[in-house]
Image 1 (cartoon, rainbow, N blue to C red):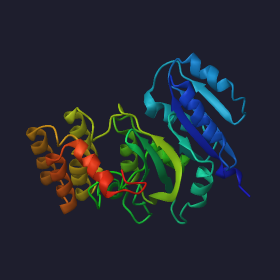
Image 2: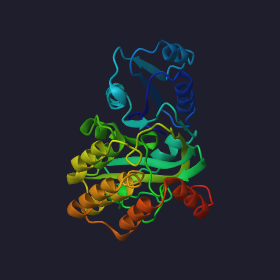
Image 3: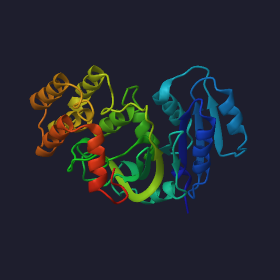
Image 4: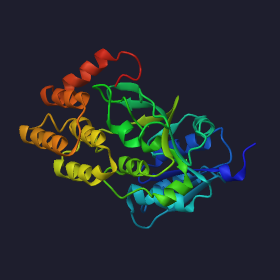
Length: 310
């Protein structure tokens, strides 16, 4: 029997995507877990989305319409503030969940961990096909920063914990709110890694569908190298030297490394000066530097023929 303090609040920030957010809300309300509420924060004036959500008529759904835009981090933090549940599950408005996601994550919470952050494997839908990430799961023994950035292999998809998979205690989010940052999802996880008795745990089942966007800014695709490196430098004190070097060489150094010799030199210099690069990080950076992006992607698909390949 589920006790009241185990209520889960699903927080969905959105704006100007009424059909997508309706799909996300439908998947949240279809969860087998109870008790559960869904809080949608409309991040600025958006009458079409308000009208679309009114059609649900479900008492578990609360819609908060903001008069001014706060950004994704601000909208998520407001959703946390208004949540009645002791546990918060984030869902992006363009993603969706399998019906058993919350139930399986709640059941898998590790004993003895005060602040467990539960993630899961995803079906990742891309223009090149569908894949299942991550290939390597995070356990309570793993340091969060090291898990996110210190890869054991050459290719993307080995580690993965997007916001849309995360379930965490409200108490943790009150202590460590989502930061207003260009890379707020990673920065929040990195900061949580500094908190005692906080762990990231990946449930092995595929429980979410994550739709990638061609215009979504990531560290590897960000064209503003100054912004990416300044952000990396700002989180360096919260990472191990190995994780910092790997962030630069394997994450930031993705498509950036293929652009110009000056960019490659700048990334490598920072990694060697301020980090502790692993042989795999250096090998990955060399591959990124010498091999065109399209060829790398074809090579990934040739090596990893099974679902989850990337």
